[in-house]
Length: 115
Length: 113
Image (tube, rainbow over all chains, first blue to last red; front, side):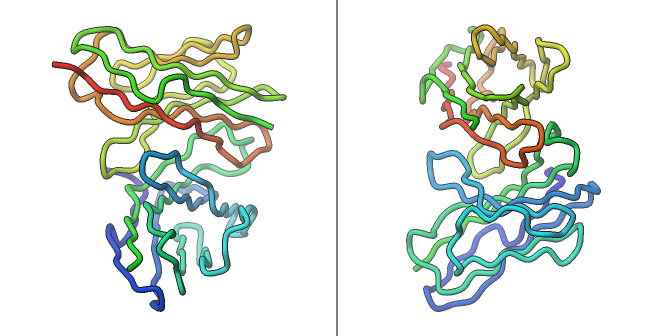
C-alpha cells in the first residue's frame, strides 16, 4: 500500500472534457509533485509545490492547471487535452526545506487516455 | 547541472545470479542519489538512497548500492536474483537546494527461471 493516494486510477476523456486528478498524502510532507510518465520512459517533472505554493512549473501547457488546496491535497485540472497527453500521471510528496536529501514518495498514478 | 546515465536499458539475469545495474552521475555539487523500482501498473518505490553518510547503502528487498566518488558511480547490486525482482529500475539524482529529482532512462530487469 502506498502512502500517497491518487484518484482515479484510470481516466478516459475526450479532448473537450474537463476533469481533475487528485492526490492525497498524510505523512506531513510539505512538498508535492506532479509527474508525467510515457510508456518505457522515466517520469518527467511537471510541477512542484512547496508549502502550498507553486515553486516549479516546467513550462507545462496551460491546459494543465495544478492546485494545492492544503498541505495534504494536490489536484491537477485538465482541459482541452490532446492525444499526446495520454500517459501515466504520478503524484509524489517529500519533506520540504531539508535540502532535497529526503526521498520522494510516489502514488500509483492515474492512467489517462485522451480520445 | 545534474544528470544520471544508466548503462543498459535491458538486463537479463538467471534466478539466483548476481544482479548489477549500473548508474553514473554528473553533478557540480555533492549529489544525493536514489534508486527506485517500478513494477507494472504501479508508481515508483524507493529502494535506497545516498545522502553523504555511509558510502555503502543497504536498501529494501536485499538490494544495496555503493557510492564511488572517484568513478562517479552508484551501481545497484543484489547477490541473488529472485523472480519478483523483475521490474523497471530508475537511478535518480538531486542536490542541496535543488527540489528537482533527475531520473535516468531506466533499466528493465528480466529474471530467467
